[in-house]
Amino acid sequence: MLSAEQIINYQAPSDCLKDRIILITGAGDGIGKAAALACAQAGASIILAGRTVAKLEQVYDQIIDAELAEPTIYPINLEGAVADDYDTLAVNIDQQFGRLDGLLHNAGVLGQRTPLSHYRQDVWDKVLQVNLTAPFQMTQALMPILEKSGDASVVFTSSGVGRTSRAFWGAYAVSKFAIEGMVQTWAAELDELGSVRVNAINPGATATDMRAQAFPAEDPQGLKYPAAIMSAYLYLLGPDSKTVNGESINAQTR
Ligand code: NAP
Image (tube, rainbow, N blue to C red):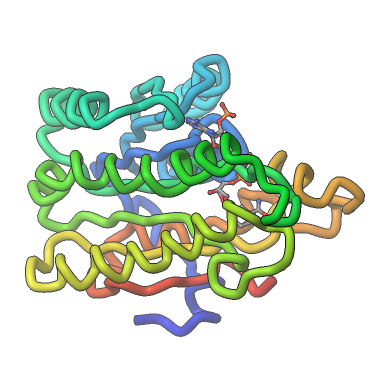
């Protein structure tokens, strides 16, 4: 495995994702959008999953305009989705592609920035549903078609507050701690298999709508933009990380 610094500075070989089928959740905005564009640029066929179709269509158009492999739009609201929806997703991907080579669980919600003693139950439920339960259920349903790949990579999105919590980060921090733990469990269970690896990525402070929601007074000019943190994503989704399993890596030093 590369060192932490080498991963952040990783220069993905062009076409490193050639002919790979990669599903990205929350692909219409922020880091997910940048990941969809970067992975398409590296040769992958992207399944753009998300809840706002107009945003997914914009990403679709950008990929087509760049004359890259035609992506697929898959509308899904992770807040309301149930096991049957993920089974349907698996059937659709299997019928269209016959396998899945990459799964980037990127979609997430921040919830409230408030003390736990005042945290609303409905917000708690929503944050854990979107950030934790949905990626768990989706991974479970897609595992058979990931196994068909022979070299599949599942990447869950963590956060700095998923490793060391801070006051007022509520359900968001709890969901990211749980993601870190779930990655270790999946990785241990799949280690023998050797064909599906599972890792976590912490994007670090990145100029997106979520970051602005969390730090409204911050000047985004001082942050990296999503397109500038893609090295670690390409590393984890590409063949150079084939033996990396159960790790939690950083996409930038911050
Ligand atoms: P963002 O700009 O707010 O984008 C979040 C994405 O998730 C959007 O595409 C959004 O779709 C989608 N999403 C939210 N709720 C959804 C639902 N119910 N169903 C389907 N899709 C849903 O956030 P971001 O900063 O790019 O965050 C991406 C990931 O990185 C998140 O997991 C976040 O926790 C993590 N992260 C970000 C930072 C940072 O500094 N930005 C730091 C650490 C970790 P819509 O556009 O339709 O709302």
